[in-house]
Image 1 (tube, rainbow, N blue to C red):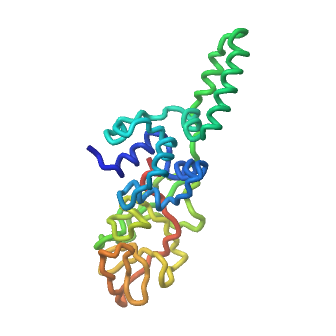
Image 2: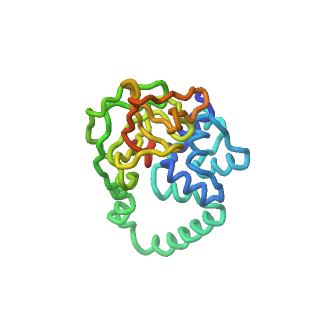
Image 3: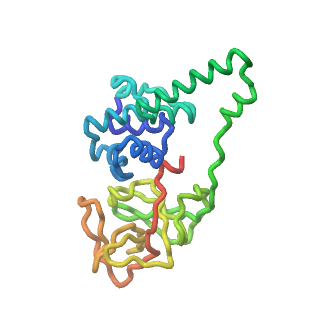
Length: 251
């Protein structure tokens, strides 16, 4: 059996939500949470309280807690179903009322137009994509990986996720920068900007690449289980981290 946090993530995906879309749905239900909080739930770092979880079940269309823990929740297959699931009781009553009246008005007179039905199911408009130069080698959010800066490939990413001023992307490897960055995320780096003390950058030290917070004399992990790494005169900075594309946003 999967853990509670794993089932939360599966339920979100089954409901057809990206992380950003789920946050928006929570806000519509007066659940004020951040992206960091949702990632915390899905990684077992924290759990929602009982009231929030009950409203989360409505948003994700979780009808049975036993099915939820067994991973048997049914996927939401259409945009209309997903929007309907996010409504409160008042909104659902209004939709049902309008639907019933319109059905009684149209059904006795004309048959359902197959073309109109097909149009309702039309595939959503394609998301605009952009090309990003991404390092084939990751920067370690851990103990360090080799990063020579010479091996990059073009990768298509959603254009709306890019940040102005991005020079290239670097995949994250490890957990030393949690809870801000996670393994598999792609960091957006500006080589025109260098991180000040307290800011995050991508560094080269002893032939290994790191994503760390810059200290006065050391590279600092946000995960407290990792010790700071002393910098020396040969420490090189590739640039400042100005954004991130989460791994599940590339699905």
